[in-house]
Length: 382
Image (cartoon, rainbow, N blue to C red; front, side):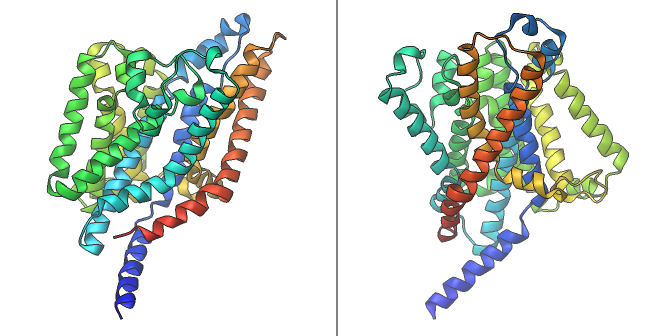
């Protein structure tokens, strides 16, 4: 009898979880990854190409890949906060340990596989003497490598560099699990504290690129905005009702504004004031995208309607991690290849090859490895 009761409660929660699945947002994950990818995939040792107009365009208009990561921060906060609200509604409580285990089952297996694999190769083949100083493996095992990078920079092995964003997300998960368990009633004011704290921090360190990019406090505004968006969505706030009825011309204008700000990022956000509020401006636009895609009745396009992009969005973690691995290999061979490179190679063959290999690896990893482990999360609901 007790088993049936527990099973019934579990089924109720799983049904509720399915009801709050935001299918439109899977596709946006892939677009977020693509933004990061475009910032990394164009490189060459050919000086003529480096000084060319196309390469100038790439470096001045497509290199703001960290905006894709900012979107992931906002989206993670939105989803985790919303699901936390849903868990309390259905089960009457929020279990932070099970919450962290569920998140860990999605993130840890692939992350630790890459980290341990890379460090094993470095030490087994004695590559450490050929690589500039890197954070110790303990920094990666405990998700604190971003603080090492604030002090020492990012001039080391790329496959290890870009994992800083995963460290920040993991730090937020731990903090937010505590908040949702013990400070649940204060989520909205705490979110505003995160936003204000982020702006002040960026105002102080506006000339320090390492602090602006890698420090956790710099990114807190993204997480705060995502949490507020979740509160608005879950409670059917009046703001959500406005977004549901917003007209197509206004949607078009907001998306056009987002594209313009992205393309001219390095021209617009250079002085103290713009740098201080940059993450808030883009964070608000990201929140609009999340709510508009999920709830608007007049969307220009619902990205979740494309099955291919939707599926690729589910692979976003693998795409992000494996693109770093493949890029590291490509950069290594590019630096050691004395033959001249062509425009087609730099701007077409190279990016397409890296993207296709990344997608192939991500699919194999997800279907054979990640998905099997992720299913274990079903045992860790309250």
